[in-house]
Length: 252
Image (tube, helix red, strand yellow):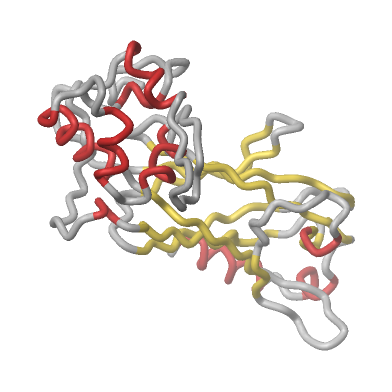
């Protein structure tokens, strides 16, 4: 990545200031032991390190204090504690044929379950426009009460750079890009609408949503969206204004 001055194949832990190749063994051998944490180790990447530290500078210091001086640990922690931790929630808005009523929104399950779980397959109509509503929330910003700054921490980049994101919707099996949207700095919460059309043929499809950072390596996320495509909606065909309303929603 150009912003961090690092090759894509290198360990994302090397983006931390003062951390070099010969320090990586410190993270690999670390184990939380009897202390309670959402991650027990070993540590191979930035998200695992963030989970292991859980906002505690003393935990990070205990990992690297053998090889790093106190001043270098402070610089490294300043970078680590300001990395963007983003929580993602999604829903799909559109038109459905229903015996009782036309639904307007269904929530996308994010918990990993088996593909045979019928609850994870969202029933949408073929050849119809829907809007994927993506809600982003920044969690535990900086682990401190410091003033929020939209600038990315990129000491190897020659000028200041605003932190940003890309939302990419695609179908991996067909290597097809379905939708792409640029998202700016997420200060606290941000809602993004991504319009897409369902396939023309009924059946089961798996779309994948990627949240990709334009400033940091290792902070990307991806979510599979399981779609059970039904025959075209008769109500949507009879009322073309529905599609126009969804298009307006996606532009907001």
